Amino acid sequence: MAKNILKMAISHCSNRRYMKTRPIVQMHKIVLTLFCVMVFCNGYAQDLHFSQFNQVPQLINPSLTGAFQGDFRGIMNYRDQWSSIAPYKTYSLAIDGGLFKKKLTGKYLGAGLFIFQDIAGDSRLSTTQVNLSLSSIISINKSHNISAGIQGGFSQRKMDDAGLYWGAQYDDNGYAAGIAAGEADAFENYAFGDFSLGLSWSYGKGSTNITRNDHLSANAGIAMYHLNKPEQGPGLDKLKPEFVAHAELMVGLKGTQITIVPSALYLQQGQLHEINVGGMVRYTIKEESKYTGFIK
Image (cartoon, rainbow, N blue to C red; front, top):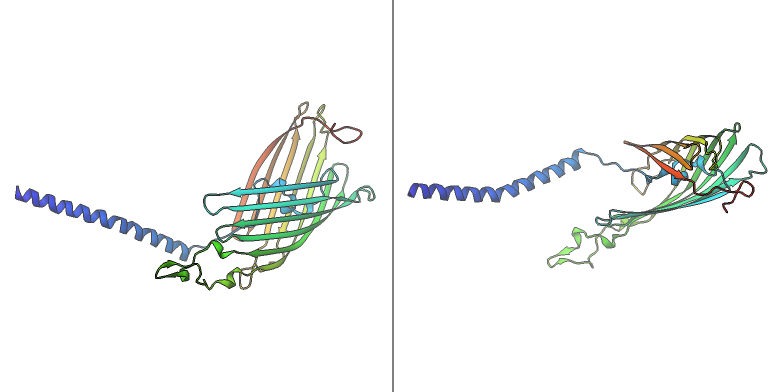
């Protein structure tokens, strides 16, 4: 009996010791894993982009500026994601239109303005960009158009340390907001210029009215952003050029009010590659007047 009690006591002590050491071993594994990730792995970032990329034409190709049926258009975007863990918010405004459509035969100019601001993380890392776009659209024939565009502007980056806590701000009594963090240089505003260009092709035939709706159109293009490889701040890495390729197709289902719009986008910047494939279904509620061009 005494031997059995002794064995049970030893086993109980061993189990308690195992339970105590197991969390410590797990913590060591986590720390080791994080250390290996930071030392042996590289982190890469990518330019701002939207999943509905066809709603930001100047962001994917400067040559799309003014390349549409109509006089002027305006597009606004707002995105708010991951609100529970240091959210980021993105705002954008785009305005563009065609110039000299009536004065020039078989060709015209496009001009546009694109503004966006992205705010992310506890540091409120803010990127604000203002770009002007200029394009030239040439009609090869009744169905085919080609266009070339350039874009230039400036960007500003800044951070706010109000929501950050630094090790240097702790004393014997805990965190003290009045202690200087000594990181003022990291939060200086920095502005830089940016330059991009692009080429695109478009095709269209048929009618979009409700009676026929046999319209078929397509567009595709390539663009290169950040051609001047601007520095993002004093002593920081240069912004790598971004290559963009895109395509879109619009197919009207004859005799219906439905149009199918599949699209694809490819992005490559440094080590990053991304492919977006999607589509929309458009339903025409009421068509425009054949004489005035307005919907009554």
